[in-house]
Image (cartoon, rainbow, N blue to C red; front, side, top):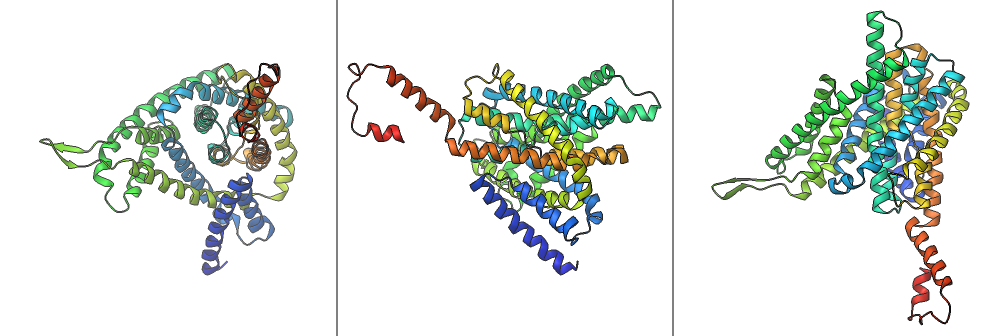
Length: 446
């Protein structure tokens, strides 16, 4: 492919991604399905793109897109609403991820005959939902604030849980290999995982809070400068690198940094009672969110197309049945988790619970973690990439069913309230019913 043709192809992909995103808003069809299908067409089908040349860059694109999307999710979380629904969202996230990881681990042991420690690593990779898919869907579906924020918190922490767990497992297994010792027992592995997990969370929280408070003080100096959004992006990338260097949770730190910038009031500078530097105001936070959202859209577009180009049809055929088996297990686990989660998620309607049961999409974080594990653990984990690809496909089709059903039935709380009201009215004797005002019938129909 010539340079001119390659540049033209990039422009075509951006237009296609924009059209797929608008199609997703109108029809509910996840845009990543269109992007991955385009990659399959350009790579394995037409051979216009040599996937081998782009394989080293694929993980880098995915990591950058994940950073931007997690930061955007943090910027989009309002602290008041988040704290109110935080327990329910966190409970659902941890419960679903733990049970999903356990289920996928057992499938990998029984079907693929993997050792338990390798199966656990595969289960941790495939067990987390993708906020990159969930968050746009939640913005498009008509839900009450309680349901939307609860599922947003769950999705945001789902990415962090997956990255933390996989990173801790890779570190534990790498340390064991370097020391030449035997494979750790499940109890030793679990103990090391919990300790490392807690340390990463605390360390990342401290780093992100300090960085967020510092950057909120710097913002008044930057908001009236050209390209100041790039400085914020630079701060995000430095924070990610520092958190990784200090063995913290890099993505969790990025999300907390976004939450701090979105919720901490930015103050100007006063000298002798005279305001010499005004705060940037709410528009600055909106501009930060818009800029990183568009940049994340650009990077994730190329990532999912590249993912499609590196998949081989033979590997996809072999992984198709296994990924469908994993999908069935994940769906059952999700239904069980939602039923158990009713203890924390109070007041959810049946339609909201139905959508939540179908909302188990895998996406960006699953693909990035699969590439990371395959690179770290060698050839015996090459099966994980097509398996992750197949699971992304199935789970997004399942999500499409959920969004279409939600749009067909209307807003869930309104439907149930109208039904309950109808039952109550029917229970009232006709003689006791007061005359209905004009227009009441039309309003009830609406």
